[in-house]
Image (tube, rainbow, N blue to C red; front, side, top):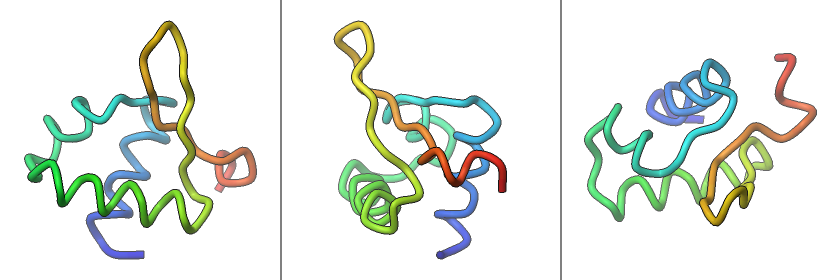
Length: 67
């Protein structure tokens, strides 16, 4: 995992869930950069998407919540 990915995971762990716009606001990445980072974290099964109230949030996979 890259340092940027670790920081994204730490943010989501702290907030419990975050929308793409919140993550972008925190790190100031381009849409494509953020999309790649989130895709990599989903592929590693660290993050997953959650649809709630017609919005998409990113949360930690269950097994990653305690670590």
